[in-house]
Amino acid sequence: MKPNMACLKQVSALLLPLLLISFFKPSHAGGISVYWGQNGNEGSLADACNTGNYQYVNIAFLSTFGGGQTPQLNLAGHCNPSINNCNVFSDQIKGCQSNNIKVLLSLGGASGSYSLSSADDATQVANYIWNNFLGGQSSSRPLGDAILDGVDFDIESGTGEHWDDLARALKGFNSQLLLTAAPQCPIPDAHLDTAIKTGLFDIVWVQFYNNPPCQYSSGNTNDLIGSWNQWTSSQAKQLFLGVPASTAAAGSGFIPADVLTSQVLPTIKGSSKYGGVMLWDRFNDGQSGYSGAIKGSV
Image 1 (cartoon, rainbow, N blue to C red):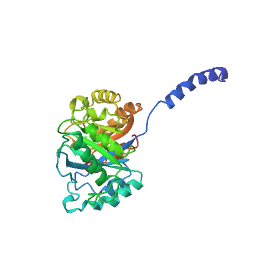
Image 2: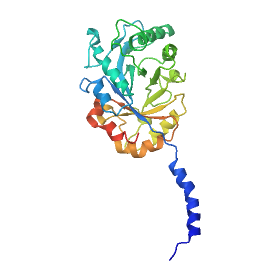
Image 3: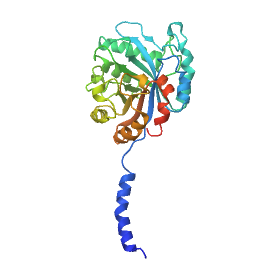
């Protein structure tokens, strides 16, 4: 029996637009960001970059600053800034950058001694960061002469005051400086809300963990997706989904890699603000292999 060519042409004409719509459905390829520095057993910075899995590495943390304190870098077991041996990472930073990996200094952390008492205090901290880690000059640069690509705000204690002043002061040195922030997923964030509203942050990697109202739990993605959708209305230029790299990396909110790639990413990648996935942290990712399991889908 011969096929009816007129019918086939008609069906093809009807199917083509549907195929094109399906093929060109908006989806945005992203990258992976990771925090490095808080576990001496996670390997070197070069090791992290050489995996080829990360587009951004946050050196964590500058954990003491503000209020007249002498700023202090805390890289756990990696090095001791007080004897000036963290400059060993200078060449490693440059090596990461030569492979198009952005390396940032992360401020704060969950446990640290930091605060900003005034706009003037924020300016002084900005001056210190610029001269010691970025494009300025200092005889005491903790990480040597490498020039980092930007500054990450992981502010989890104290008040929300003057972080906007710090962001403005840093961007004042160089408008191309990369500024990122890591707020908790409940809106508004208790510490970074005012700063994020300045619109100065290039990337906001939201912590969708240790926050039951807005994280993944027990097969339920609704709270997570709902919170993500709220964040897309923020002044963040680009958003990353922040998740633990293993069950041990956080108290709650771990998303199995297969759930992330099959249920979460296909939904959130439809947003024009989608930038990728942030992982806490390099040590746990090294143990679990999480970034390797998801990078083809990010």
